[in-house]
Picture 1 (cartoon, rainbow, N blue to C red):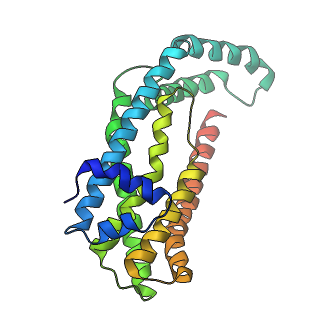
Picture 2 (picture 1 turned 30 degrees about the vertical axis):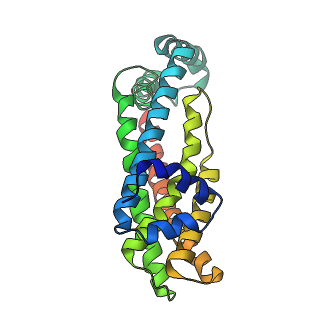
Picture 3 (picture 1 turned 30 degrees about the horizontal axis):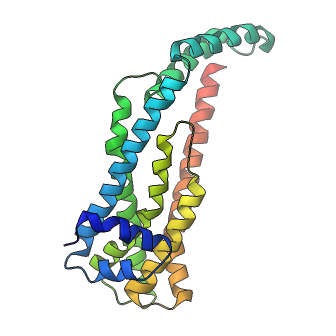
Length: 238
């Protein structure tokens, strides 16, 4: 059983794609448990960073009520120019509903909801890790890999390593691009598949791209559903 104090070293070596951390997790007595602990630990720390960043951002911005009032005032001045096709009162009601949702999710309006990020962040990373681990295992075995599911879950847990960059979000208005995190994570998944399943680099690339293909499919479906929801929303406001 690895000690949490070894996690920074494992993460640091995984970020530069060294084989040692992957071998360490594959050879562990219970790799999936180590992977779960590593992923949840990083997720918790990142969630705390997001929470602190949200609190500092709220302190740096004007009060939410003032911003909301200014936006509504601007809308009331602009709405007469839209003609008779749009009901300004209905749009204003929808805006207020949307404002409540956005401020609750971002923590800009205060309250306790933003505390959930300490729970949702590690949970999201754990679910992502499990999904990627299962896809990588299935694809790797289909391409001739020899690793077990337990070993695959242990090695692919290191895909959480790039998320340590999200600790920078503790600084207000600082964000880390999802493209960077996704690309770096895919490189780590490639290395995990190569080491765990003893695959040549050509096959390991296809294994690493399999989760991305699945996520793109999910994103397309989600985009369609969101577009349909926006259409219904705008249709109700007209």
